[in-house]
Length: 248
Image (cartoon, rainbow, N blue to C red; front, side, top):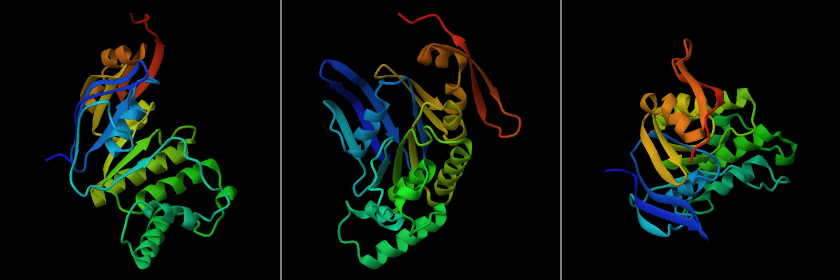
């Protein structure tokens, strides 16, 4: 039985369609990436999965008691608070959680992500603040973690670190991961399944090896690409070559 299922989801912003007949199953322990152009409905899809947005039409089912955390691309932080206080905010939506459990969980996730618990957030760089937000999302031990552009505008070292952390959590704790990203190489290195979202509709979905197809990627982004398996990592890598002919 899936953790979450979406059937024939439709969503519009005024007269602008965001999602049109979207269908999705999220299984336990899966690593899924949603890719597509700007404005094609990726973030909206994550918000519908989390329950933060209600679709205009269609059916959403979530396993009873399922804990879902969502890390958005742009999240304002109270920068004069300490890291430990911000991370503890991840418990805000839960009820009947005792103080001891909060303290233990905060200490564990801060230690795992190598964060300075007593540091004031305003003293941290953008990459470290992003790590604080990830810790806040993980502290309540969610079953499903939704990440919207988790490595946007961050350096290569951070990209490697967040991929490593997510893979380890998936392997050791069975964390189910759904990522929205423009970074096709991150998607190929982190996830097992890809969903190609094209102008609000599911263009294709399936295993990474099948979806990382030059024809599909050209159709999705309007760019000719070379795709090859990297000799050291074993992951497929995507290199954009030229703009393709405009789509109708």
